[in-house]
Image (cartoon, rainbow, N blue to C red):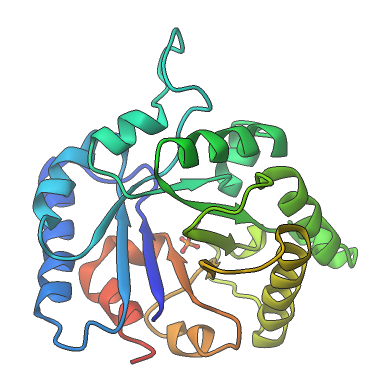
Amino acid sequence: MPLIVSNWKMNGLGADGVALASAVAAKVKADPAKSREVAVCPPFTLLERVGAAIAGSGVGLGGQDCAPKASGAFTGDVSAPMLKDAGCFWVILGHSERRAGHKETDAQVRAKLEAAEAAGLATIACVGETLAEREAGKALEVVAGQLQGSLPDKRPGRWVVAYEPVWAIGTGKTATADDIKAMHAHIRSCLGRRHGGLAGLSVLYGGSVKGDNAREILGVPGVDGALVGGASLKAEEFWAICTARS
Ligand code: PGA
């Protein structure tokens, strides 16, 4: 069953956000097949309102980041127990926009993943190479290094890794089916070796997933779902992605 996660990023004010979440929730609720798992990750300010809008629909709620500490003097930060308290099931961590824009290191991402798991959140850990790294033939090596540095040693019960080539995010470019297949197999092999198994793992693809390419991407062997940014801001297009493989 594919897992389709929307990442609204820094988009959404109250009325529009609630309308978007309500529309997605209504589609999920009305869908007799129930052959997909759907999550929405709005900005922190909308968590409670989106949570209320999706209540009872089966859509999961997620945050887009959390602090590595549970509480304390960290102005502006939001902790994993706070996300849990706000109704989150999921949290996205290590997104390339945070790695690049906020200089998050693998060690910081790992501390956040540990904090989220300790708080009982299901984590979505993002990895992916830049265009320069891919062109230098280093994509597999870079992603292996991010997995090694960012993921905690202990394997959680529910476990999601999102492969998001940085050059494909928000650009309209997507990796080829062969490259996605090879990277997802590589991710599984790295994780299987280190964690002694892959139980509970889903590997998502992210980066310019849209209504018109979702079927092909979600059909690539080893792709268990998608992490969707821009195209998740329109209910119809997001739902087209959700239903692309079924
Ligand atoms: P995009 O973003 O779908 O807009 O490319 C994906 C992501 O950053 O998770």
